[in-house]
Length: 86
Image 1 (cartoon, rainbow, N blue to C red):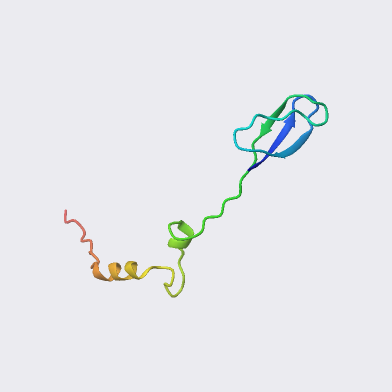
Image 2 (image 1 turned 60 degrees about the vertical axis):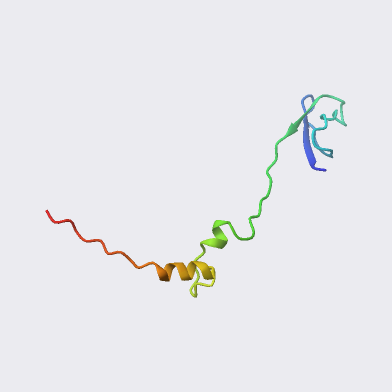
């Protein structure tokens, strides 16, 4: 169950409640007035493969690249661009 933060519309009292998702807002514990649910920030941590910081980080020894990436880059010859003649 998530913790929701509320603010009273009458006395501006702020409080938190542990409630099930989709439950109606509670009355203010201080004055009994109507409350509004506040939006808060959520901390996110991206871990594992598939994210930019783990897949494309450059290191001195190339350890962050997978074995498949190293073999594919060796197999493709580099194409040289020739200037167009006028």
